Length: 92
Image 1 (cartoon, rainbow, N blue to C red):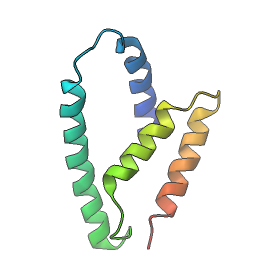
Image 2: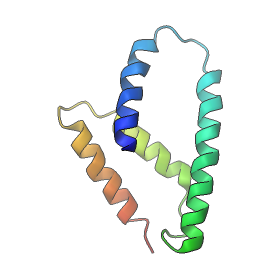
Image 3: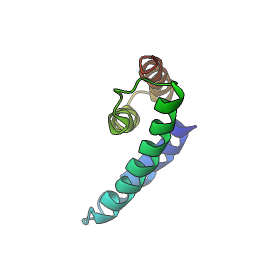
């Protein structure tokens, strides 16, 4: 589901990339994402679902990178597989 959300953002970002010169909106939204993801990961660490040495921002950057830099026809399927690998490797 998150991959589908990012796929939509990928299309919008490409359309707007030439129109937006100010990156303050990106920075503001990324700060919100960091906060939300950090809270979610803290709960997952506390419950023992993921290892305590995981940096949630690293995961977000990896997922976004997989989504935005996928150029092949099957990029979505590849992104889902890579996110699965990332999450499986994060379990204790």
